[in-house]
Image 1 (spheres, helix red, strand yellow):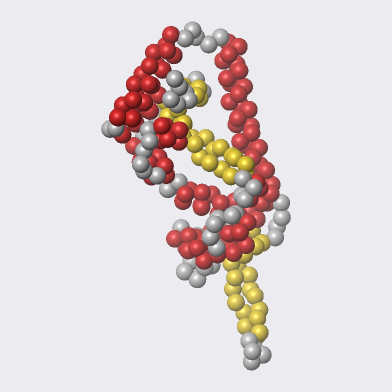
Image 2: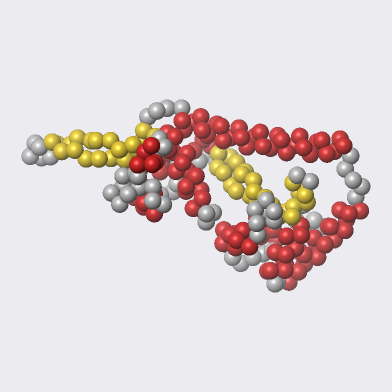
Amino acid sequence: MEIIKIQNQNGIETVNGRELWTVLESKRQYGNWIKEKLNIFTQDIDYIVFNNFVKDDTAFGGKRKIIEYYFPIDIAKQICMMENTEKGREVRKYFIECEKRLKEKPPLSIEQMTMIVISEMQKKIEEQKHKVEFYDAVTGSSDTIDIGQAAKVLNLGYGRNRLFEILREKNILQHNNQPYQKYIDAGYFRVIESKYIKPDGSIHISLKTVVYQKGLDYIRKIVSNLKWGK
């Protein structure tokens, strides 16, 4: 009986980290669990990363990015041992049996290897396509929007005050919510003067931080990294 799906990634038999967490029946939240594993192991040596775009009508552009991690079976066995649970030992034994069966399989033919390579290329092309679509959507105009509108467009789940706070914590905005010069020079933000009239008839000027369409993608990356503890 198949406990967890084993997938071939670039010629390496791997398992999906999210699925492994599920079958191990960990009591910890997935975000904390996977963060611990990423701190122990090394990217592109002990695990590989893929950006998976799923349909989400509530997200900007109708797509939501989910970062997926794939571990080779050897590393997955180590993770099972680290759990130190009966379920962990059960899953580890399953991986050992899978390795035995894989060794008994005949080597792939040239045609099969070609199909694997083509499949991987198609995945990468599709991933790049989504990136280009998003970039075109957010850079197709030279207009700017304010921070509150940016929070809504990116569907962050919170408003302008929280977004201001995050950008200050990341040293992108200063204490007065105005961007540091390097982020202005990068074309992400702009500070504009806004005139307003007080009840006494006097004219005053306030400074307001607005986001270029190019800056939306930058903010999206900042917030996405926060979700994954980066």
